[in-house]
Length: 379
Image (cartoon, one colour):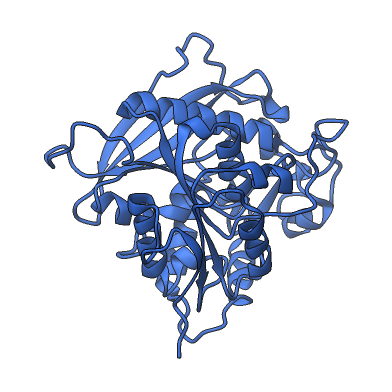
């Protein structure tokens, strides 16, 4: 049964929201849902609700008349939803709360198919996973690997850009600003920096951790869309831990309580996946194109790039290539020691958060608007 929402009567910027207290003092949480007519292949033409979490200072705190330069939108990577990645409920590990405490209004969005945003109905069918991923559900959910009911990637980079634009437009109107800052992680690189290349008039500065950049990426969409393959992916607790542990290069690089908190939030963001076996996180398969060397070379948006030295998913060499290719003269590469792909959840998270604050506030890191800065290495 198809379960996507159809909300045609809603105006384009209709808002559902509610406020909640936050365990970390000094910030409040507001949940927003921004409707958008989806362009994702798996639910094209249906209306999706895009979940946006806000962390900001309480209304009792004095604000400047203009919030220009004070609005930040976080964009997630290929698997972990944004509110899980950037708002870890452990003191000192919420990137959103860190910037909010410094006076920024921070927002984190889930594109279609992620976290608390609308998920295409095809993601409810375990048969739409790859045959290998299905093996984890034999025989508890299926007797043997099965043929897909929808054998294509669920979303595209263009549908992600479409979702991002809906949220950016919403935030511009909500806060009365012309531009927002973007902070992104992993596949959030093509999503956020690619969006900035398309809409430089709406983006002030960008911070990208482990941007999934490739000099050989195709410039044009595939001839046939959607692209055949698994509609979505899954991650179990074991998958999560193994992937992180293989990227540990320093003693006490991350704390078990942080890993546990992230995983609890991961399952809470996916109530359906939480019931599959011991619980999994689901994410749509996304077809990516267009964020090419040429596009990056033309990009003039000031950008801070961060590479964790132990990153086993996006090698630091690829981040360095993006730094070399980036057209903006205002660009800094932060070479972060004792850090993996999950740097914002690790021992040097504070260095990362402070670097992002400096960049968004000053357009500089340690007084530099261009060059490579090295931090976090143990002597």
